[in-house]
Length: 360
Image 1: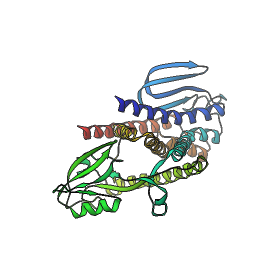
Image 2: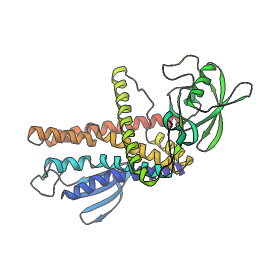
Image 3: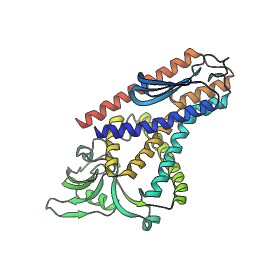
Image 4: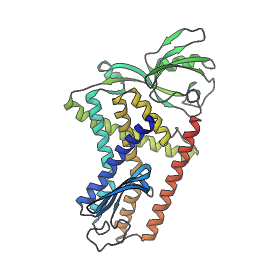
């Protein structure tokens, strides 16, 4: 129950920020906003304020801003979306993406001021405190995944078959240990969601390239905190780096899918993200802020992809309209967006089903 509430709270904030961007830019452009909705229909409840209905809907994973004339109708009406010039419409479409990016940077500014956990580079290791070896990635169908090891878990050390404890201080020591004990059963001592636990794992002697005997990617992290004035530019810089890394991650994901017919990494849907959100909340407030920033950047990048029904897809169609010099046929545009929306729902359902099967 607590996990669900935390997850819905996080998603609610991120969706609100995204849709607020569309809402504010539409109002500034003189467009009539008919509805500001959290979640997707059917409607659960709604209240009208002026010309806009503010609604809560039954499907909580998303939100929308319904703008008068956004389907291409009523172009002669000055309050409609279609009556406005190219740039005001483009700004409205991309406002949600921009808001998610700005919000992520804002969260990272707060985190840098309080004390943000980051990957340690050799050049700035002396400035960090509370050093930990954390799990950065868990390979699908690996011994680590089967044992229930999660991203963000802290690897404190290992216990060998004779009961001896081997502490680890960096990622290399983790890698060295698992390679030295390939094919053996070892006990991993972890801090998971604030609790110290032991996980017994049978290390592989043969494994896919890049995964290792255990199937994790360990990294050394430390906590950094800065004065408020320095936290501002560091939040912007960290956000920009996060965007670049996310773009690169999506490129690897899709390029591998199309060239090799498989996913390079495991993908989580609402259920998996809910579990990760719960784990981050147990670790602490800053960890939750950091995860929210990551999700916010992912929402921005995902929505910017030129796929039908996403903001990027709508922007692409608007660019096509600009070059054509005339509006796209309303029926064709509707079919494109409907097809894209159905495809996204199907993908969401598939990933959610796969997430559920991991727990049971």
